Length: 89
Image (cartoon, rainbow, N blue to C red; front, top):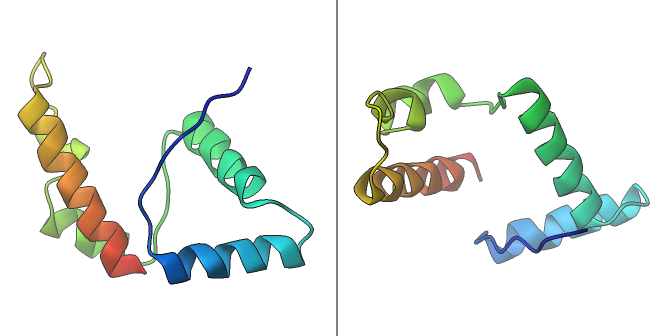
C-alpha cells in the first residue's frame, strides 16, 4: 500500500531534482522514498550547513524534552525546519 505525501518546495529545486532523477533513470518519488527509508533506518540525516543551522533554529533536538508534544511545539519546529531547508537551497 502506498500513501501520498504533500510537501512544499521551491519550484526551481523541484525541476532540478526531477531532471537529475530522470538523468539517472529514476523518478523523483523513487529518490524521495530512498531518502525516507534511509532516514528511518539511521534516524538521522545530513546537510552541508547542518551544524550551524541546528544551533540557529529551534529543532526537535532542542524542543521535545517533555513527555508531551504540543501543537505549538510542532508548529515551531515545522517553521524552523522550513527555514533550514530554505537556507540549504
